[in-house]
Image (cartoon, rainbow, N blue to C red; front, side):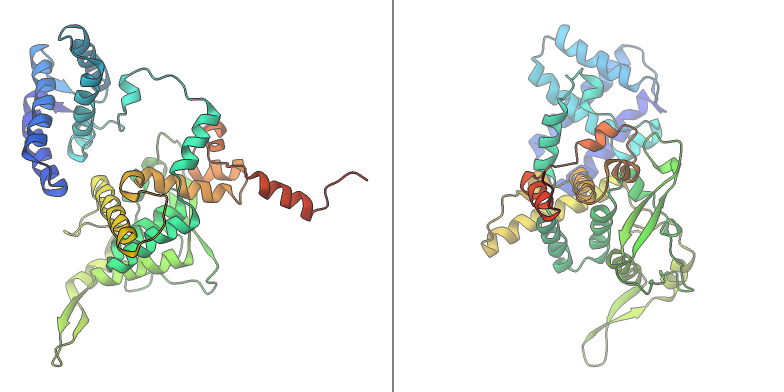
Length: 359
């Protein structure tokens, strides 16, 4: 719950942080400040004392109606207002205080149900192929940021949701942890490792579920943890070497959270989103500088959701719908079915290989 008279303070912090991360122009900041401030002003005029998980969607819908009918704004203009307001309402600090699930535009505006085949084609377009996802990971690896690489590998391997990833604890990865706080690597390098997703971290689920990561991703998690326990120092030969920092190494032994921010605290959702966008831009720069022929515009198309879609689409190439549904945490198999992309040539080759014909 947030008292309405406190929203302006949250807005100031939100805009300041956004300015630092996205380097927006002064004009853009002014427009967003105006649009969100008008919503806060509306709440005050309507005598709304607080925003909470029970009334937040209602107030957003009523404000949209107010803009359309009483202020006479065009629908496209109101859509811009609502996008700015929703981004603020869904910001990490505000969302945590109100304790609501992420609110989408379709929660505010009645949207016509999408045809299943249309949805399937849409998801197929925004899922990365194996080659495209490997290019994305390779670009991050070239940057040398082991944490960002581990985060994105975990997404593409597991297909988990953003909330599930940021709330992962070290012991949710189902392998033993050694005395230094690192994972003990299994002997089989082809092994898949269980990742335990607790019910309280998932989207509206009442039970725990399990997904998987590969051996190589587990290695990347160890490299990430090793990096945060060491510091590069110059030796007598003027060569930088990693040196273990005792306090950080001791903290790693007892650390609960898997992914952390630069301050050593659990990373937030916005932090992960910014990481993915940053490396997506690096991919586009690399494509341009190396003259690579690539149909994907990473900056525009790659996001947290796209990495989840990519993972689920990869699973769907191998597993049954029911198996993918279990991994994805979908309550409805029709949702999972969107990720099953039928390759007709592949079907004919399979039939041919199995001599499927009448005598």
